[in-house]
Amino acid sequence: MYRAIARNKRNTWFILIGFVAFLGAIGVVAGWLAGNNWWVTAVILVFAGGYATVQYFTADRQALALSGAVAVSQTEAPRYHRLVENLCIATGTPMPRLYVVEDPAPNAFATGRRPEEASITVTTGLFELMTDRELEGVLGHELGHIRNYDIRVSLIVFGLVVAVGILADLMMRMAFFGGLRGRGNSGNGQAQVIFLVFGLVAAVIAPLLAGAVQAAISRQREYLADATSAMTTRDPDGLASALGKLAEYGSPLQKSNTSMAHLWIVDPLRPNALARMFATHPPLPDRIARLEKMGGTF
Image 1 (tube, helix red, strand yellow):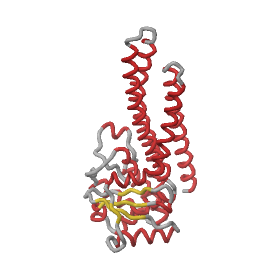
Image 2 (cartoon, helix red, strand yellow):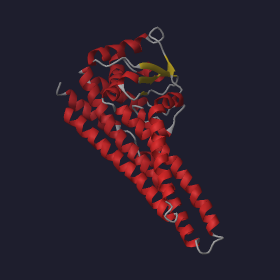
Image 3 (tube, helix red, strand yellow):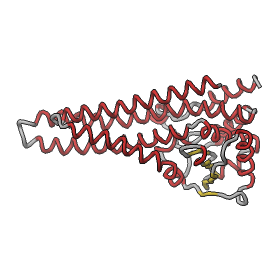
Image 4 (cartoon, one colour):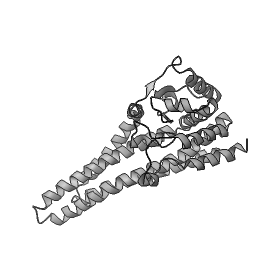
C-alpha cells in the first residue's frame, strides 16, 4: 500500500514536470518562429506559471462555485457529518467543510490545498442511493484524496489545463493576425506562414495533451484513493458495492464542467468516443475488481 502511494506520487510529478516542459518548448518554438523575439517565449512561460499559481490558490473556490455546491451544517445533514467525523477521528484528519449539490446524479468530490483547508461535496442523489456502509466507503475515498494531498496536485493540473486552453486560444489569434499582416510583406511572408501553421497545430495539440495529462494523473489518484478508503474503513467491499451502484445508476450531472471532471469520484459527463480516449477515471469494473481482491486479504 505504502509503496503504491510513493509510486503514484512519483509518477504524478514526472507527468507534471513533462507537462511544464512541453509548455516551455511551445514558448521557445513560438519565440524562434516570431523572428527570435524571445519576449514571446517569456510571455508564454510567465503567463502559464502565473496563471497556474493563481489557480492553485483559487481553484478550490472555483470548483465549488462551478458545481453549485452549498455548505451544510451538522443540523442540516447529521448523517453526513456523523460519517465524516467518525472517519476523521479514526485517521486523525482535520474535519473538512461539507457541501451538498442538489442533483439526482450520485457523485462526490473533494477539494482544498491541504487537509486543514479541505472540503467534501456530495450530491443529493448519492445520499438517496447509498446505505451508510456504502456512503462511508465513498466518503473514505474522498478523505483519502485529502490525506494523500491528491487535491493539491489535482488543483495544479486544473490550473495548467485551463492555462493551456487560454494559451492555445492566444496562439491561434497571434498566428492568424500575424499571418494576415505577413501577406502584405513579401520579405516576411514565409516566416508568417510558418508561424500561422505552428499556431494552428499548437492550438489543436496543446489542449489534447493537457487532457491526456489530466486523465493520466487522475486515474493514478483514483486507484490510490480507493485503496486508502479500504484501509481506513477496513471494508473494501463497502466501497466496491458503492461503485457497483454508481456503475448501474450513475448519470451525467445537470451542472457539469469538463475542467473539473477529474475531481469527481465517477465521470460526471456524458461519455462519447473522444471522452473515453481521455477518460479521467479508471473503468469502474477494474476498480471494483481491485477492491474485491483487497477484501479477500482483510
